[in-house]
Length: 401
Image 1 (cartoon, rainbow, N blue to C red):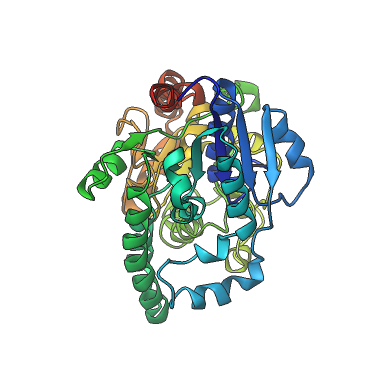
Image 2: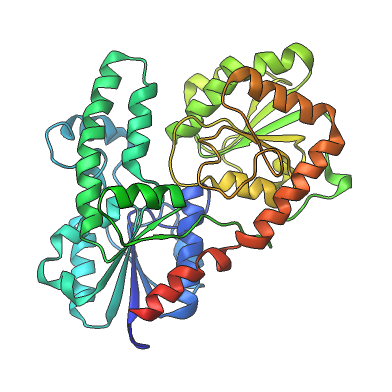
């Protein structure tokens, strides 16, 4: 890539507000790319127009084309996806206006790299025709969705839902690989995912881990720590892996913790909690905050941060955020997948309810051990997970093109 070539960053969802893990990665990768090359964003219009100024403040040229599909239309699109080659929700998120803008910008001759953010943006590569060969195409997966759909299928209990997810898993396995093969570079969050892609015949994968804003998430101070027994989980609750994690924690783990610490409070911090979880809120026992402008005060007050995920892909930013605030973390193996953590040194890993509850109880009762675990986690994120550090390989790879 020459010094005059620009980057076209394509994202179905507008990268502001930064209110979930996917948005966090999108925003920070975009910001790092804009530091080194002229960068333009093509995305659906944000729900709040003030978000455009936030992205323009990064030095990014913003072009909003079309709007995201309405949430109420999701069931119809899910039904439609049983008849299409593409899995759900690819066609739901496809926009003719976005594709036209992508093509127009490539035709201008000023674009050297097209950075596709998520698979629903990467699908446009199939519609570029001869323009495809005029640019370097990069696809940031965020999550390998084939793996996620497999886990959705395996954990589904309802027979109809399980059948639907089995079909979508099959479609995703084919579709995702086909899109990846059309790319010059595929970005994954972990070495585990890079190795998986290699078995698929994708040898152009580059590991760009999730990171943390170490200037924003800073260690809590002693006078801000709430010594009451508080367990915290953070995450966008419309995201099914997060909702599943909270349900499992409430059903299988929290009762074991409460048997020994009756007054423990479990707080879920994140937007759009589903109705079935909201119905389980109990004052002083189980709280759902909904969307908050700043998760840090809730995390600062916690004694233990938990990540009981059983489904998912990529790497969990929530764990990095918690570690950056010097919180002791208990996670499942899936929850910490892809992170360079050391079991027992900077995180506790447990995959069954009894082991998970015992780990939480141990940290609640032994503040010295909790402190050592938290400090080791803080050292880990500061040494290798700042956004500048994790995107350095991507920037260097673009320099060589």
